Image (cartoon, rainbow, N blue to C red; front, top):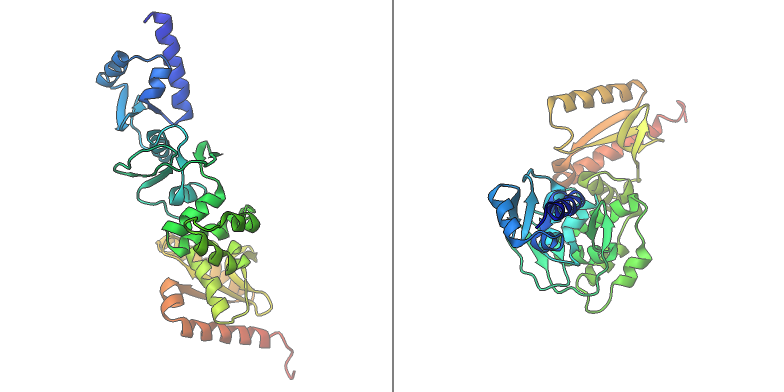
Length: 307
């Protein structure tokens, strides 16, 4: 290969690498004009590193989520895309990524360590999301319904609603006889509470369900009260409930922030209550009575003495 041909091949490979976060397949290298001998030479010199069968990192193997996702899609072959829980996490619909990357492909490809392949799925349309191909939203939700915990499905629905991307009619049309997940998705849509879209995280979503089940007045979620973002707020009763997850309320700095916010809210005459996951789930009756008592006190104090 001449110098100009080698340079042209290098430029094509570099363009691919930029698009795919440093990951390319052997087939793509061949299509770019890189011969088998050149691939072997680049591997020997450390310019290429195998990360999955027939998938290489170019230049270095510096880890990144995008690079790992691209490697999985490329391994599954042309037409492949992210799906299931991996797609839901990539789209910001669930909080935690599955331990293994899930991809769908029209081809006959086996799963490997770290990558779960749903193979021979013909007729799926690829949709780009943040640069990586994914399945359409109705397909992703059906797959979630068929393979994941119902809580993850409800979380995805509420986040889609929050992003103004929840099309219930389209989801209902996607459910049909013989489609795995259809029954579960229909049930989730039938019981979906639109207030979930205002909840931020699993504990707040649990508190929405808690209020529904315990017939408590529904508060406003994630609103600013005197400059403090409050998890749940009953304006008429001047009551704020903060829901303390381990992620955002466990460090010394976070606890000091919480105490400062509580002090500021109390200085404006508000009552502030705090509950964690264990209290909401394991001492539900005590929490219910605590909230009801605070609501009654707040409402009573709105009336002048003698009324």
